[in-house]
Length: 281
Image (tube, rainbow, N blue to C red; front, side, top):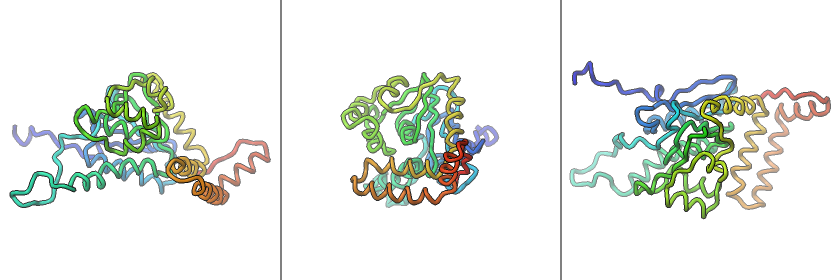
């Protein structure tokens, strides 16, 4: 193959597309030739985009989705060579501790970006979400699945350990016993099964997925953004802290929210018997 025939390596900006429409930030995985698998560069770009939305007043909700109908995200792109530090000739290909470091610097940045985002994040699952792709969806605040989509905890099928915070998020959604069942057997979970298990909020036809997601996202984007932010923070903390700590967190959340423009507008609109005009701050 000549240089002219060599396929051009796609830029992460082409593989993860970003746009803001009607105050909703849309992050779209567009890597269909590899099953919408995430390379390290794609994963890092997604984390940067999500974190960047926190300081943008023009973005008040986030949607994560993918192109096509078959796959939302098939997991990590294992065809990409991992880059290790220079080593002696007789050193093993991967020294103890290197995989851990790569996890902390990679997968374990994207999921916290979603969980800790100031904005509500919706996953529009257009197809199968497998491995870290499943956890990408499940870490979102709301999940809407196309009726043909599936969730697969595929790790043990490949002799791997779940990553991407799966062992943290899954028991919180379905309980420890069911989480072990899903992870041990790695069986396909249909959209309807996911709905009954509490893994998603809604199931719609594939043709209706973007419309249904847009409706929810734009409702959130036109809402009291700081109230939603503090509500998300409280709920996400509720399973990790003791009751006394949450009481204190709740009191501070109320204190902070009382100083927002939208809080004053909510009270004023109630007294004046009119619809509120939320500003997002």
